[in-house]
Structure formats: C-alpha cells, structure tokens
Length: 338
Image 1: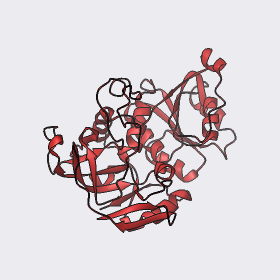
Image 2: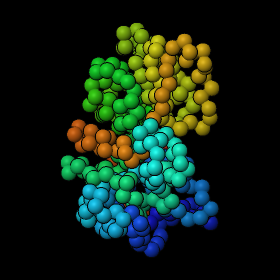
Image 3: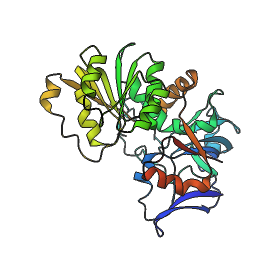
Image 4: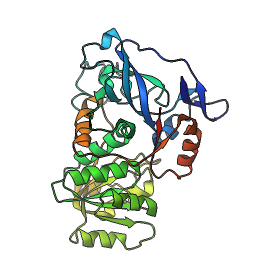
C-alpha cells in the first residue's frame, strides 16, 4: 500500500510502498478514506531515527475485525473516526472519569500512534473508535479527530452562558472550528490573529468581530468597547505562540477564564500567583483528551453541521503539504483522499 513517511536518512517526507497491516488483538483494520495534516505532525513525527508514517487525523471504513474486537458495537463496512492515542488499560478511573494520566502505569494513553494515517490502510484499537453519523461528510471529517475534538472540548469547558463573549486567539484550523462550536452553543465570538487571511476565514465561519492584534494597536480597547467596557468572559488560545498567550489577559474581564490549548515553546511566565489568588483571571486547559469524550463532540458536530474548510489532495502531494505548512502557506486543512 502507499504511505507517506518521514525518512530519517534523507531527512524528508517520502511516499513509498509498505506492507498492508493486519489487525492485531482488539483492533480493526481500516481502509482510510481521508487523512489530514496537523501542525503537531511537524512537531512529533519529523524527529524519529526510523521511518514513521505521518498523520494522526484520519477516518475510514472497517475492513476487518479481530476476534478480540468483536461484539463492541461495530461491524465490517462501518464508517469510523478514531482517537490517535494508543489505548487505555481501563483499570482505573483516572483517564475515563477524571481526564488524568493513568494511575496504574499500564496505559499507553499518553503516546501518539506509532504509525499514522497517511496510508491506504491502518489498524485502530477498538476502544479508540467512534461511529460516524451518516450526515457527516467522511471526506471532510478527518480534521475532526484532533483539531475539531480539541476545539469542541475547549469551548465546551469554558464555563460560558448563552450570549457571553469568547475570544478565539489564533484563527487557524482549531480556531475556525472553535468559532463554529461557540456560535452553535449561543456564544458571541471575537477572532484575534496576526494574519488577515485567517481573520477573513474566521469571519466566514461566523465570528462576530475580528481584529489583527499586530497591525491594530488599539485592538484591546476596541474589544473592551465591543464587550461593554469589560472584556470577554473567556479567551481560548489556539496559537502555539507565547506572544499570543501574553496578550490574552489584556482582553479578559476581571474574573474571566484563560483557556490554554495551543502548545507554546516556552513557559507562560506572565502568569502570577497574585493574579490568580486575587481572581484577576482564571486558567484552565483542555485537549483532544481521551476516547471516552469523543462521542459528545462528534454528535454535536454532526447535529450542527460543523466542518473544517479543507483542500483535497493526493497522497503524492504530502511532501509539498508538509513544506507548505512549515512555511505558513496552508490556510485550510490539507486533506488527502484515498
């Protein structure tokens, strides 16, 4: 089968023929329909000292079911999406109930998949799979299984009430999902970014207002004016930039919530214990999280017909896709159709 891999010897992404996998204990063999490129692929996958298949956002159809995965509510031919974590031991409540790291030490929940989804076939642990509602366009659904679910969780846990304001800081793929989820939940949204084309995308998916936080030197005052002079009720940061985080408290009202999502390269050194203790603002964080949380996000996405803006590509385009993302040229989610 065809697969897009990182080749450590050549230090580049290549598309090659590799053996078709078989389902192991408790797994499905999945014929991949679509897989999408995420910035995390550049961070995680382009480091190994051995070849590794890229991609952790994928959807497809079950082609074969191992005996250990039978009777789990799935059948051959089902359209499924899947969480990219390797698996949970299901012996404690840390991950299933409290969304924490495993207490037993047996779970591999913290790790990315060993080999990814930019391939014609992949194997998936049954507990990491969720059936796709029939009204979801499977060709566009791959970004949901990292970017979309992450954005949903972060908006859903922002503790907002209908009609309150959410600032979406970083209006790329995650931010565009977040705006759509927030609007569907009844929140008002403000998009903040330093890229005008991303801000145009934010407006196109429903942002009530957008501001370029680099070129508009008065954006903080304008945000506060728009929000009754107080600032937003919550600010979710989807950018991986420390500068984006540093500016977030400026648009929050007193007691507002800073939602941490984007992975910044350095610690958030602007946060002080005094600010937190005196209630200037609060801090939470969320992520793609665990498989047990997927269904709520997937069902909400289907109900409200939320989808990412995508460009369809071929597997042969993967090296160029990676180069475009590295150079900041990918404005939409880049999706390979198999």
